[in-house]
Image 1: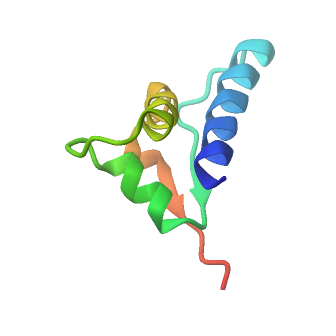
Image 2: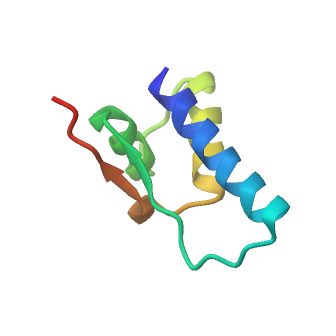
Length: 73
């Protein structure tokens, strides 16, 4: 579920940039899932197809450094 939310965030960011024609230097994305951050940052592990597809979509737009951990506990 968390990976799907990250995919949606990347797609919405891409859509807003295109539709609003706004030149932004950099977007920042937040997640409360340490697992999602580890998946995004890990370029050496092989994932199952469903996870790998989501990770590749997430990596299309932002760089791993654009992701932040948000503590929600």
